[in-house]
Image (cartoon, rainbow, N blue to C red; front, top):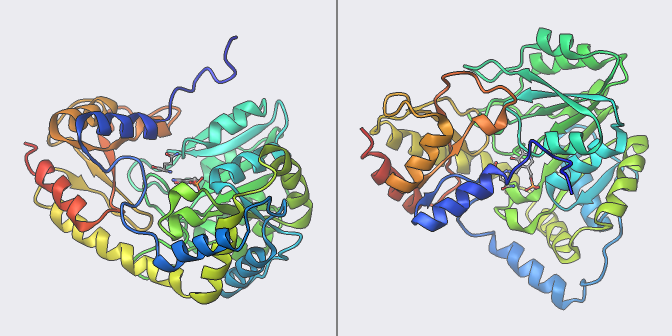
Length: 381
Ligand code: PMP
Ligand code: GLN
């Protein structure tokens, strides 16, 4: 039939999880927690199903959940989005990103993405008939070079996609970065996707710079988050998008014919969770900071060199002391020969930096899983 996505194969996350399964490897590749979902949330889900919340949810999301998201957003970022006009519950952040692109991007447009970039952005852009314009982040720090971003924006630019905390690097945008972003997009017709799925997983006292804190950004932004990251339930696929009324209206036109609505019982469960345990997400940073610190201490006993991790649940390691293989080859070899699955960085780039020897390890794992991985990684010479 020919292909509409010639550059796309099976995602690296699926490829590496499959390889990990085939070889009995400890899977630090695909990003997902291997510990329990909060018991209250599981109980709430079961209760929602027993209470009969098993038919279509409202297209925009269960009202109680949108209210709870509005309250939480107000408490965190000092801006309360209108739950009726500005919040849409989606089937994960992936659906939200797809819908946001298709809501505003037309054939022939350009969308600026910062490399390395999460893998779902470009296919959504391609399917809209538009073109992704890739601007590299600093290869050492993964911080944006705003002069290059500015230079990439031209008359065809419809959208810019940012992600903080950043997957795969964990880098976070600072208040200075946000000021640069405001200066770049203000008085342009450029819309923004701010992918903030790791918004609560931030370390060392840093503040998450949500686009929602900045009036000049939130008036042009689709701000995307995911309950999967916050409640250890990536398989439930529930997220949401906050955007001003005009953008939300267009967003919902896509959402309603993409999925119509999101899994109803989980929406009731999250509404209850946010109401009953409004502090849950506030503990997430400390929870993962402990994991990060323990894992980094363990990595010190290997020949892998860990890069700084300001946020998120991924640890980048430089493996140049143990291997000169390309990152894709190295991750296959590590999985098959040493029993630890990792994610190479090159699939996150249009043009991977030549000679870059980095792999991504997920530390959203029980200590026993990390111990098993470290035991194997310690054998690398
Ligand atoms: N954006 C980023 C940066 C991610 O890391 C992920 C998932 N790992 C997503 C979006 C997609 O989130 P969801 O699973 O809720 O679709
Ligand atoms: N976002 C997860 C990661 O970065 C993977 C999600 C997926 O497999 N689609 O590992």
